[in-house]
Image (tube, rainbow, N blue to C red):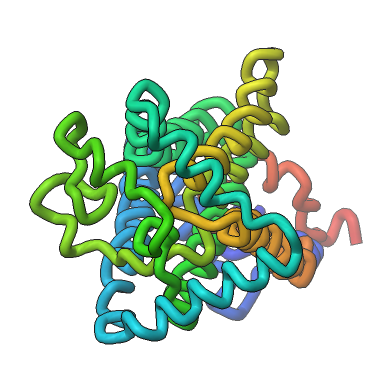
Length: 303
């Protein structure tokens, strides 16, 4: 009997396949299967870290696309406020002034704005990786696509945040001596000039928080986990508005990019043939199980 590793196709009645493509695919699967499990996990983990680092690098370079467009950013900010006023939900100034007047409220809000998205989002990714591996790839892809959509929004429509406008208080600048961030932005001291301060629309703080809450509610097995999944996005909306960093429309746009990313990833997955091996997910086939379904070749005794 010709072995599967030598190029047998189950749909060819156990006959060897002349083409090199199936043999190459099976050989690659066999080599991956031969690797130790921890080595495969480390290689995939490294790939995930490099992917996240690449997306963050793209975000960091987005500031180069808005340099010299300050007038445009402020004009867009005025239009955002005009739309909110017309819709009668321009509440940012009221919330911002109420919170900024009290250090006991403003300082925790500043810390949450500067810190939580750096902590909660990676922790949810690690949690999915360790506890819900089969759902990790799709969830990570949605997060990455939403981030890319946000970067496109920053580039096409730079918007000055509320804290740069008259009547608003920049709470992070007001209380910067109590925190680790700079007076320029929520970045650490000394690197504030390297951030894109006109990246208000959409709010990726809200988008990432919504993604985190969605995963916690969907996959959480404890009531506290699911409750935090509901509470965290709502808290983030309050924080980004109270600190003067985002408009309410920014928050809605941040939620919208997550929904659009989910629709895009779902649509692409529906277009993929169901019998395609998902090599990107590194789901290595068990060759012994596959070979058990390959019929024996015909002989003169059975012909």
